[in-house]
Image (tube, rainbow, N blue to C red; front, side, top):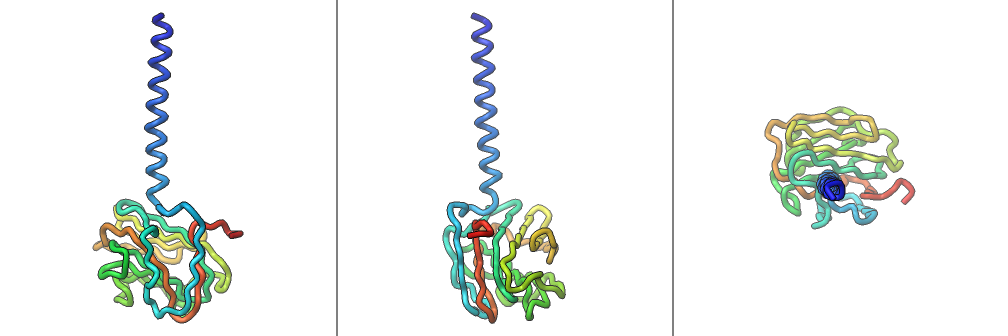
Length: 186
């Protein structure tokens, strides 16, 4: 009888650990993009940097490390904005990848605002679909932009904008296709 009781207690302990581990894993997975339900293709024309497509379901976690991975096919001027509201706001982060005819990339604290970080380089393989990752690390006050494994921008903002949840895409003078949650063959 004691043996059965110990086995039951042991099984209950394993079950509790499994539930806790499952919840922690689920929390970690949902801390990046929260709209993992379906592939979304977003085609936009030249927008002169205006953000017109804010969607309620395009969100990242509101604190800690936020990561947005997306694909884009563009010749230049990939624009991504992060805001604490579901719309263009001041302040917000505006990230331009390959602006100025794919010769410069920058991060601004508002749409068309002054730069907090910039490099004189664009992205590889213009005109082809490529994967980009933007990481906003609130703890380190750091923003990084990668194309595949290649770091394009790595900036520190000591006045890091808090509670960023929403994102949107734009362009400047050229049509761009963006993909979210899509395999490369979609």
